Amino acid sequence: MPAYLLPEHIRRRFHQPVVDVMKAYPTQVKYIIKNFPLSFHPEAQKAAEASECASEQGKFWEMHDKMFENQKLIGIAQYKTWARELKLNGSKFDSCLDSGKYASKVQADFNEGASKGVNGTPATFINGQLVSGALPYASIKQVIDQALADAK
Image (cartoon, rainbow, N blue to C red; front, side, top):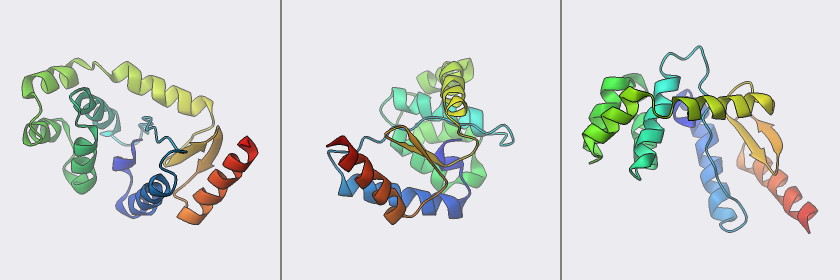
């Protein structure tokens, strides 16, 4: 499940520490988002696909933020509305989303996560080590510092 579909209290606990880590380690840490749409969330699959369609036009983070800020409104019609608000090519976005162009990529991300032990969100990997849950900055920093020390 993408981070933007996390309950608000978990999202806040997860998102800010990640931002802080990226600021603290600007050249040592690479942040990659993978999709993990949980089956009990009816909008997770299409939300992930919508973020990929927005990414195709260089607006992943903008769509991400729209979804974060408006979690109670998520749905296909709303993604299309937001795409236009974000000045995406609407027909290209609609075609991408309606065709399921990224459905297999989203499923591949999910399968990869599941094969590596992910069973919920958020889940983070630091040098291949699974760190589950919305951890505070100090905990994430400790794992990163150890990984950097081990790499020397």
